[in-house]
Image (cartoon, rainbow, N blue to C red):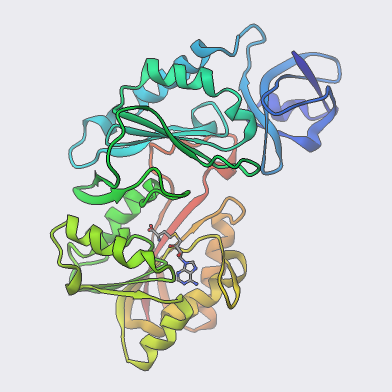
Length: 390
Ligand code: SAH
């Protein structure tokens, strides 16, 4: 097996089970290729962990085991999948939900690999060339542990022309309809990087419906397939969905239809969020709840958008369309943006605007998106509900 030697003083970090192998912590290593297994040793040649090479973010790869004698074979993955499955028992047993994450990367013991369950259609996501080298072993282990109707994969790394597709089982006709908190959504596992729904937001969606929608006009910005709108519409006076992408309209209408809501009774705009702020202001439109769940980064004809640079202006714009007493749901999906930094941006913006506000709820990932206790970036999702008077 290949060897990577740590810089002196870095052992404690890895002995404390930090799972990402930081390139800068390595003093020297053998020639390493994607998918190589590597022993992490101290400068005294003492064994610490076994990892694999899969370059992602700033990492060289991920730790897989702390047992020098453990073989990384099908059985290794079988054991991890079995314990992941056991921890998801809750989701298999509840009513009204049949889609959730089965295996969440480093949180479940293998960085760079996730497996989602969409009503027994499974989706594997490979986040590096390195983890993809274990494809055969991992698929064998999936077959052993998880029952499924069909199995799909998506490549989440660059330098591949193949982007994913059908792997095994009985292919359904897409879209399929999944259920989450008694709400129905269409999902397509063969259509680009996104599937139609972000499963990590399920509790946030539920909270929006149960506590921030009743008798309100709800504005959902960056609405994609309208998941927040569709669940809010069960209690709201009206919903308005805004997304720049043309295709969002049809997908959103279909999701309303699945839930017995006439899409014509709701508002859908294919528009840039900032343009919509102007449009709404011109037309005197106001909302009691505004949802902002943007991509971390986006480019359109006119400009680039990034949450780091633009979140303040998004919040300011939202205030211009918020009723005198209303709520904001602000989300970010970024490891690079900590909860503390996010709260600071929110507070600074609201203070500058001189509004009275109270943070009602701060939410993160649901239980199925199991995180790693010693790796903070795995908690990438932050969602904050705020009541505002202005
Ligand atoms: N909030 C969504 C997920 C958002 S995905 C959900 O709950 O499922 C990001 C979406 O932002 C994409 O659909 C993309 O088309 C849209 N988008 C990107 N830039 C935009 C902009 N400037 N204005 C409006 N929508 C934008």
